[in-house]
Length: 88
Image 1 (cartoon, helix red, strand yellow):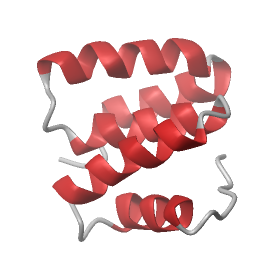
Image 2 (image 1 turned 90 degrees about the vertical axis):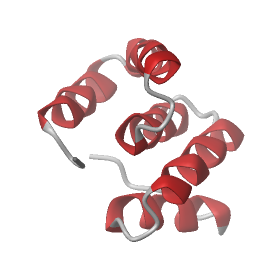
Image 3 (image 1 turned 180 degrees about the vertical axis):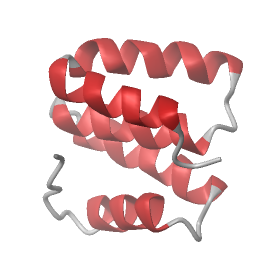
């Protein structure tokens, strides 16, 4: 399901250590490549680290997996339109 307890843990880690969060999402995606939650989290980590092309690619994958989710769709559409994101 989306979001889950793990997504809130990743959100906290993203704020504190986005590089580590990115490493964790990569490990998770190696085992669960169809996890929209992990793709979404990875997109936010990339964005926070200034990797906008990678953020767009990850957000696109999350959006493709769950296009009707408001989180994935707003991040993907915002990045694809070149908008700045506010990540809290």
